[in-house]
Image 1 (cartoon, one colour):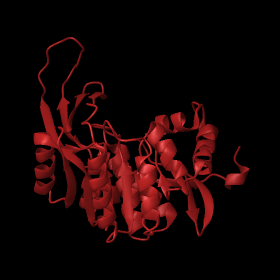
Image 2: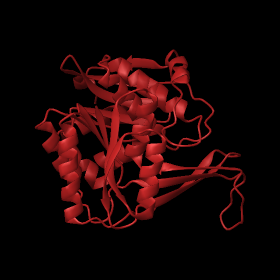
Image 3: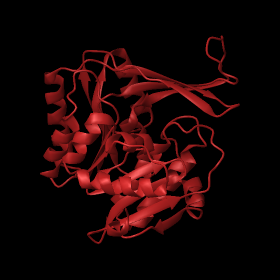
Length: 319
């Protein structure tokens, strides 16, 4: 079983608005509303990839009820801890004429120490039947930034493979807890290492630096693929994985689809390079759909032939 953790779950509304301009009145031509937050998106994609997954986290108020009901409608197994305050609603506006999308994310509910303790107990119980756990997304109010780090250390005692996809201080502290995989996007990675990347040499060096912070493997997602330092037969190897750019409908959630693909392949025991290839194909395929975590497995298989993996250098040779 794979667990996905979403502490700041949301109801995600995506509006397709041609010629969107700030300060004007518009009408959407298409819209979707679905449960979200990064961990929920990853769970949806894992479900579509045929992998056993349970989504957990915190959900509150009427919005929390809608999130859980919608997950049940999608037949996504879930076990959320219910809290008093209302879960957030996020809104994304996609302009199909330019491909530009604008996101407005609410900050989320206030969470008490008691809520967090109940969640910790729930997660440790679920982990008894799991081999992988993905911690993904932002933290709601009241949750200390080291929460992922503490939970990673707890799950390591149960020999659960831990994966982290977050940002800022929670990511920095989580990396120090020595998770198996850290997977930021490029902007999150720049913030983590403390400088901007000008070229591929900088990107290659960044994944090495992220590993030096404590993670066993680091995968930095990009629009065209990823840079990754992962273990192959116990030794670190550096890879650059690319796929030809496809005309996107929406790029929202592409990183979540990538990580779901990577986790699904790793759960199946595929070699490291195949896990990366499958993840990149999933991320690329998801950009053809309006809504995060939506994947067509047949299209993923078709895209796999176009995904290229290059081993760039041994880590010691990269400066």
